[in-house]
Length: 163
Image: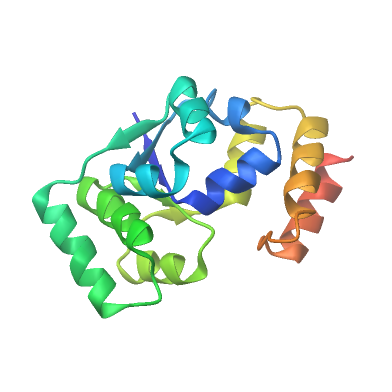
């Protein structure tokens, strides 16, 4: 089974687009490190994610050490982001992130990394959402003032979904 380790930004994008339920229908497992969950997702959203099937994973001592080393080497990365990286790297799982710095780090370490738009592509290719639902969800997510999705790629997908 493929496991996708998500940072908070991807989850927030999907929640803003009202696509969380659809995402958990994909033929993958979604996981977050326990530190990220407790610091950033605990509460109503976290409860909802757990009910949908989110896995909360405890890092091994070696993975915690890797996260600590990474945090010391790159202070621009948050501690929860370094835990997500260490979890994905340590278990050879795919990392989902909307953070450019975390993406660069993952790519530099040859870690499989994707973002929100890739998740939408999976929803489309697996038939988990209609193009209309994807267009509406992407429009909602990208319309949020704190959204950091690349505008050109968002517009290209919106055009494709609306055909």
